[in-house]
Image (cartoon, rainbow, N blue to C red; front, side):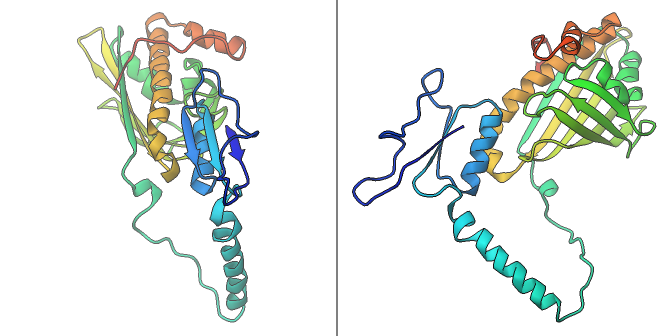
Length: 283
């Protein structure tokens, strides 16, 4: 992300240039121009840059905007001091969790479905996807190691050490099972430890028989993005599309051959090896 800030005068409006004009990025054009370096502008620009977009942020005065310099931050400091003074004069009561609207209750910004045909019986695919839910690190290239803290079922938490995929950087992601239907061969889980611009993420997986020797594995991701990132949902979706295609392809290879996909082997051999391509259908 490049930031341009030029002092403004009445006869010379602030622009990115003369001599602070930033050089054009490779390709000769910016993917995104953010006008205003306030809270929303900074968050949106940083999030887009973290997803690989070339971003130019233009601010005519001071980076941070009214929130940092004259509004939210200074006023909250005064309110905090007043609150402490007031609390010293009256008894305190425990906080209560109010029902109603929350980030998780907002309508989802994005849903993505992916599916792939696998040449093994549905029972065999479910054994890997469901019964061995904690073993995803054995076959998915973005995941270096995975553990499950209990038998598969609602409330069990899978811990995944990831090398980074889609909009998710390297780190640790915790996935808590919400539903686990053995008879219906389906499950759902909510992920925690994702980038801050993702308010909530829920994945649903299912396995459907296609005759005796084949099945369809489906994955559906539902994401709720925080406000400043909602206009960039298309960028998050494009990164997730590539990752979903690759992971389903790795699953099919492991089921049909009994061995890890070449991408998984390349990823284990060193960072940056392998390419993210596959034959899954993504919508």
